[in-house]
Image (cartoon, rainbow, N blue to C red):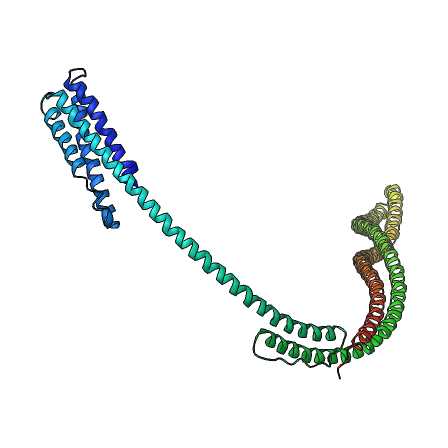
Length: 464
């Protein structure tokens, strides 16, 4: 088909173009460059000639009866003549040759190719007609075979339908009995076909159902008993949970009161610690004042010692003056009348010296007594200073203890608050548990009702 519809028409078209172009070149009507174009087309013509020859070989090999009609000797000879003329006229230097002879050779080649193409088309028509006839016979044969097969299939399908319907009716009978709760029927399979296998499976299923229903009956009875006990236990648990919730509410209230009391105690301890700190400051200030008093008493004691020394010096001076007065009186006595005035003076001086000595002695006694009192006061003040120091230390320790008590009370208050929160949470969870227990009791009651319904439904099945 490709040879008659494509290759040969292309070859004819190519020869016709070469005929026209060659006539123009040989007649001087075209440029010399056109000769080179014609020369380039010669290999193309030879290529198409080879393709036609290859196609003929394939066609005769596939269809041997075409050997006589596909002889292409005239077409091949005329085509070779055109090719040789083209080589002679256009492949040499310059275009030369007879225009009429070239045109005639091309015309003969075209006619030969047309005649060859006509024979190819005739052969193609015969082959197509032959193939159509063969395919028509195959179609008719296939139609007959299919019709016979359909008839046989319809007959076999009808037979299969009858057998299947009979088996399915038997299966339906047993299934309807099982649907009604009758498990006493005994499906008996006959044969080894699919219906028999189905009947066997149905019999096994019935045996299994009888076992399952028996177990369900026992389980439903046990479920009714268990659900009754669960409902009773849930109600009892609900009552105890409510009592626990009430106790927890009272505990939460008590914990709140304890927390408030501990908080007040912590505040009082904090205030006491503040007062103790103030007392500690006052005691520390008193200790400082007593320390200053001790220092002042020590200074007074030192001054009294110095005064005693001065009194001793005065007493010594009075003693020496008395001695000098005695000496002066002795000398005045020796002098007689002339020393009488001096004796009077000496006597007065002596009296003054004695009085000075007596006064110095009295002052010394007073100073000594004052020094002793100052020493006693210094010891008392020193003891008071030590007492104040101990008081300051005790006040500091008391302040520290009160601070620790305040901190511990705060921590205890926080702990009690946490315990109160935990008790409140526990109370809330207990109330939630009470609600859950009530729900459980309701669910158990519902389960009991469902178990009773299940038992009544299972009782509908007949096992024997």
